[in-house]
Length: 407
Image 1 (cartoon, rainbow, N blue to C red):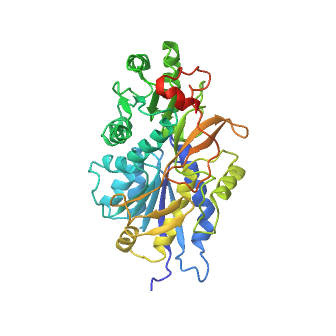
Image 2: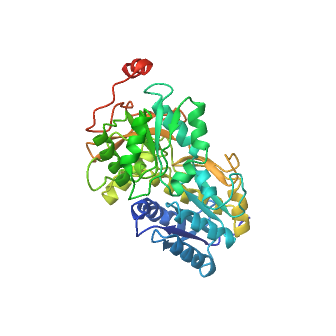
Image 3: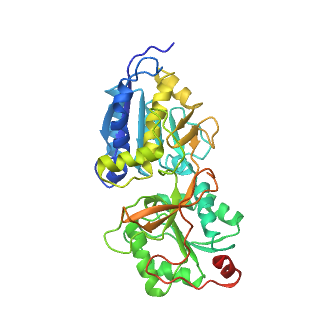
């Protein structure tokens, strides 16, 4: 039997810096659950857990520094983290080097491997992750493209940095090709300094009808202005990464009309394993206590602590914790997580659905759930709206696609 000694869990969260908005859900979930984790109660079968917080400052070097401190000076049994295409891998890699279990989320799993310089399928000893794949993103985007017709010509607005190079690794393109779509990639742009005039012109020459991206809100807004000036009026824009969050750029156009991936929402039919809170309850509590709109990371942030409590109830030392994570299956407020099932070593999968931003009533922008192929039990809130982004006239539908749009 595992002795009911206190477990120490380090939480590396971006409280400051460019990722601070994404750190808020993690901080909220941890602070919400901290009393329950510290005093699980008689008969619960769970160890008391003390959370030790560190600010990553949204910087990978500082994240490595505080992770090392948590391991070497605080003797943590497990580290939890999320957010940042450079910060998250820095925390995970440091934990692997220091032989300390780490659990992370909010990152495509192929990118999780690529950012650490190993091929998909590599087995880590100490570090575990849950999320979705680039192929999942492509499938959900294709679900939405196909609401406009078959065999679409899709322009790829991908940067020259890690996000763009990861999307160009063939996984996304293979899914699009399998489903009959043609991708047009004009080459990457530099974030915050992109040549969107040339990109829009390339799309026009190649008959692009839909644009797909992983841009920041500012870069996507800049592209849309350049595209509009050149007469490029895509019937749909699908974008992941920053456009999964309701952040509005400092100047119009905002995200209205942008379609995106959805990995968690208040409508998800899931309950917490710690206290039976529903997804809707969690989102409402977050909005009530913070005065801010719910974000998708809220559900998976809560799930990080649920998994930690589950694993630490049956494993005590670091080696046992890592081995237990490898075979863990637990139902959370983000849905069931199963590391034994895959889709790859050290990874548990979350199904994606499709969403589209709309001008809201309670908030400036609200996320409508518009496709649910991989989660049919989730009730959709609205239909996908075809046409150009807000304020931009759509391209006239052509040929066989006209019937599909009218239907």
